[in-house]
Image (cartoon, rainbow, N blue to C red; front, side, top):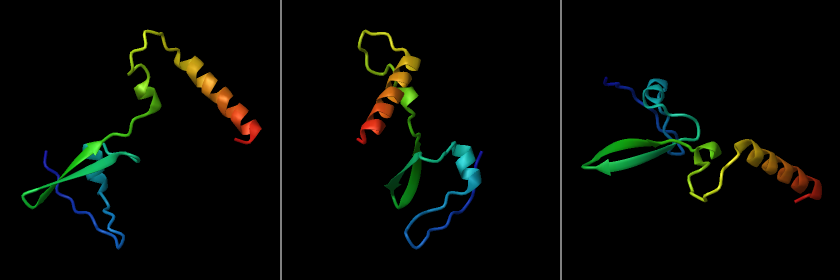
Length: 86
C-alpha cells in the first residue's frame, strides 16, 4: 500500500513525519531514522530503540539470568548510590 504524505522542515532543519507515515512504519518516540541518499533521492530506514530487556541474554555467559533479581539488584544499587550522594 502506498502512502503519500508531506512533512515540513523547521528553521532548525527538523522534519515532521506525518502521523499516517509513523503508523505505517511503526515509528515511535526514540526510534532513529536513517537517511540514505542515492541518485538524488532520499530513502528512510527506521531503527527501533532497544529496551534493556531486549538485550538480556544477548551475550552468552553460560549462566542463567533472573530478570527480576537483576532488576532488584539494580534498584538496590541505585538506592545506595542515591543515599551516598553519588
